[in-house]
Length: 205
Image 1 (tube, helix red, strand yellow):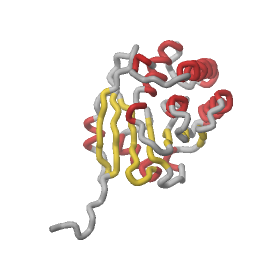
Image 2: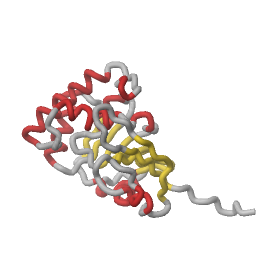
Image 3: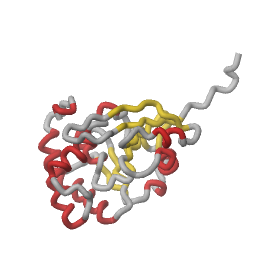
Image 4: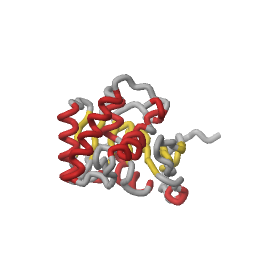
């Protein structure tokens, strides 16, 4: 955690417990193409943790969570944060429920659903997505889940200039951050997307 400039007491052993489960279940369930636990640590766990400094308050929904990335990792780092991991694949959802059970994650709920079919409008202060679709697709899938002022935190590789240009109104990029992942030299970016506020009526001079 120190490599990322983070200090979360007791987090490291909890992450290793999750990594052990991920490695164990990966053989049978094919949760991730990454097979080596050391690579899983940098390419999955540290990668997920890297967005922690920009995580807003409020309930979080992780869309297309897969093996729980970044949702489970963020829930381990922020036990006070209510996290819903949204995953339609039955095997992956089963793994997520087992992680919640074995690690005693009282702050995590598993929703076995496609992101666009999760009928919880305005329920979340933040939605995250790591490998689900373009920015335009993400706001189409999950935009209605956000509270007013809520944020989409989209984890991308190369800076997605074309995706940003294709964002439909009223969605706009609020910020972008270059992510430095220890042990992984691949380009990584965090794109923060919000809904633009409508101008107040009668405010013109």
